[in-house]
Length: 492
Image: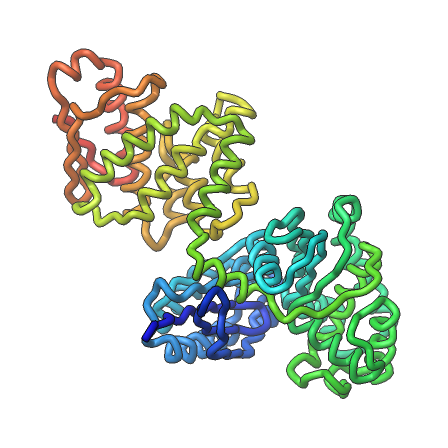
């Protein structure tokens, strides 16, 4: 009898945490189990973007329950992503540290662009069209808008306006007034202005809406007006129904769950603003989004392909010298093989190092002076489909310090969890680049590496070292450069 292993997708959203378990049978997913925990994270984010202890406790309670459900799952079959509230929280490391104690699976904090991409993949894997479509997702803290065709996204954006933060900003005391509504609507439309022209120019034929907010508005629309599609006219009617009751806490509407009572107005404002800015005629609710997109990628193991494609696209865009980066990668593989066991590295570390090698010169398009700084800036602020925020930060920081002096305070501020591992990766990258700086691949077989704790010994063949005196001098200088990393580079 054929066994079909289960896959789990966990979405740590601003309003709710979701767990979806499914198995793939003959190319289709069978949903086996769903869990939803209301955590109201966005409501616990203060004006300085710090999560309150109460919000953290609610989140940890939900994660403990998920951990019980996923007890028998291997780590490779569980994908976890965190969205707006956690990616913007300034005490995210504190939360992740506490979460690790009760939830054994890695939490990947993703950018708004990556969230939008996964939402679109969730829709694309279930709903098929031959034309462009606009997908809208309104979350607790952000809203994602995507234009795509088939499985390819054409435009992605994530705006920092959601049903929770819009409601908190303009209706914190629960009073519903026309003046506040109009003020909030203008603010939402202003946030959308920067994307309006490009989205209208790209165009679409159908519009789909995901998320709990749009599901609720669709349910209200059907209950009162017997219409399945949302229009600007129906949204205006829903607004009238809501404002007749004057107080958020007293809202009672058919189709409105109690738990959405305090956030529905913010979601309605965001959706009306989108309708008005993008001249949308009709929107249909779609029950597939981020979790489904995450699950499909986890099953099909596309993550590597997506990230590799992202790297290749950047290399082409910035006309990277690929022969040079390939030589560095070849040296990195040699150095990695010599240090992998002693330094307790893994295959993911090697992959990150090779990606850093491929991208370390993208800043040449700006200026060769300060190249490492320019390259790091580009990588940190580019859209990198397939990469988490943590991976993007790691790549950028490796590139920032691949040459010249190292500022340990900057590194420790970024990598408080595993600074030693980062120091080892940076050391290997710097050495591999030094060995290839002439852009003529040199056989490094005459260089032997041995790693022990915080010491890296380089044994050089005497004749080879004499023929490469400049390289030997560079390695001597590198001994001093690596001191702030607490790496002792010994030349034998």
